[in-house]
Amino acid sequence: MKYLFTFLLAALPGVAAAQDIETPVAVNSTPPLLLTIVVLASAVACVVFCIQVLMLVRGGQLSRSWLVFTIGFGVLALSQIIVILVGFGVIPANRYLMPVLMMLMSAFFAYGLYDTKRVLG
Image (tube, rainbow, N blue to C red; front, side, top):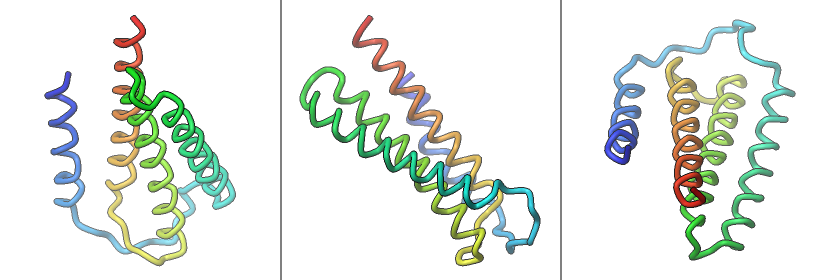
């Protein structure tokens, strides 16, 4: 499991970087800005909550799990910031960047759950 996770972390940025960057097109296929802001605020609140729990269990067996959850929520917040910046046309982004970030976030959450189950089980 550890080697598969390491392979995914190493391979995903290369896949995203190998694709061409497309210019933003005014297509209404993304969620409304208000929904993106709500998800961003929720992700930031979850990062703060995870950091508080991480400080509570610091040095314990569950600290690694909570660190992974914190990183996962950080990736979610980063992806929402990128969605907002692309929506305003501040930065151009590859169309594969968001799925890669969401897959990375899901991998962090899955590994956090796996590690929590391993420690508690």
